[in-house]
Length: 316
Image 1 (tube, rainbow, N blue to C red):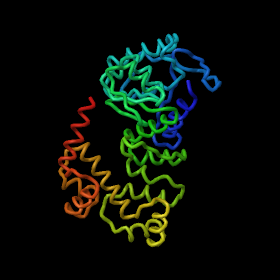
Image 2 (tube, rainbow, N blue to C red):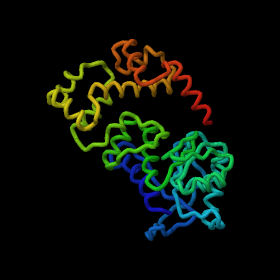
Image 3 (tube, rainbow, N blue to C red):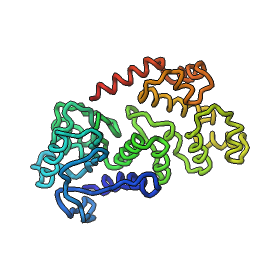
Image 4 (tube, helix red, strand yellow):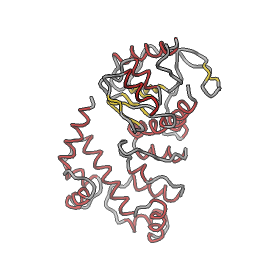
């Protein structure tokens, strides 16, 4: 077992409790109560593998020095059988995720058959051999297919944890946790698109982070110069220059991008009309929404929604 495979996601998830966002329980489970990591650190008080899972549980299978050409160790065999047992009758609301070579155990348990998946670049070939019915994807940091999440090597577990927090708690929360842990966001070309909440957070200016947090809560069409100056007691001109310097995008562009990001989520999650979504996201009119949409998307909103839902169904 690799320390960062375990410690990275644990730190991110633990931040939910540390920051008083959510009271979650983190538990290390496995076939042995004491193990030695590949880095030489001993871990103890590991709980037994649970006999059942309940809705809301997230299982993260971390990587280890697995050599597929050699017989599996007794511990690996136990984990594989446990995954096979719970995966065969996976209740709704449960997620199984892997970091690095944790995907190998998912493959051996048959959980990747017919699914999209990835792993550390050095083990892609092995993963395909173990799961010939899976679609193994290279050059990806993380891949989601239904309730199964797989990620690339080592530090990708941090990206995976932030992605899960985004899905459970929203982009603003994951951005806050990333900022508290000084995480720099990265994505490869084909990875899931980052939310605007995360895309412009790779800076350390506290005032600009406060502005971004505040803008994330605003849906009304309020003039930026008036509302921002009143909220932060800073001239709009100074704030605009500072925002552009730190984020590489203007305040107005950022606000529009954020509103479009929110509209995309509503198109996927609701059956609201275009008019209702445009109004809810703070656009002054349907025409202004359509004009902004055309700057970023090739398909009109209704066709975009239809395609997203078809693609989502295709992964199941």
